[in-house]
Length: 295
Image 1 (cartoon, rainbow, N blue to C red):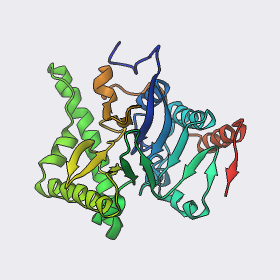
Image 2: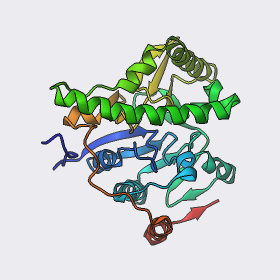
Image 3: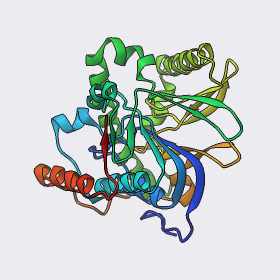
Image 4: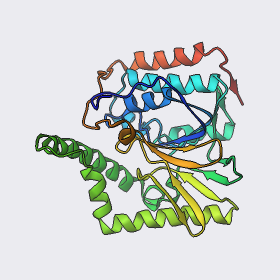
């Protein structure tokens, strides 16, 4: 295996459930190539898309899309057509999907829900929510959240150049942006408050654990007697939460597992033909053999 391209697997790993979030399709930072490779290497009974799958905030300002993005959407639709229970819980970046939640839409087998519930094979009851409702910045001051999104994008750009220098000096990849976030005292406090608020809410509602995303920080730990499970993101960490058939939960770090390099640029070129991309997406949905829209 080489670190310059996604892995290719002869065998497919079967899980009971897979949880992914914060893929941010439509942004240059999205590692859709790695995500597509992950989705091709696994199968599951349940696939939960835990928000910020398509970055509507960014697509409103600029357009970025390549064939890896198309491939991710095709793989999700293929899973739904093949009998996988696919549930899409929108986040704040794909909040445009939330207006359809009340309609109870199911498109090509993909169910749209504001939040979801899941019982693991060993009987643990999990609440599934993106998590932005527990982020006071996003909830009460959206302009600050947008500024934070801009700052994060800048940090990712600086991070790439920083790591190019590290590689030339013989050092391995190291996330400057993630380190900076964890070094800011108030940011660390905010993450802790976020985790505690989610765990407390889940506990009050009778859940054994909560699955979320939003803060781009993969984590599995007990918080006040409740399992806090953050599946991370597909911008920097490229992680997913998986449930094995015995109910065991695990965080999969796709980059570390396959010795990939986040510095390697995607081989695909961005598409500037927005109308053509939208037409292709529409055609893919329309051509789905078992496609149906239920209300």
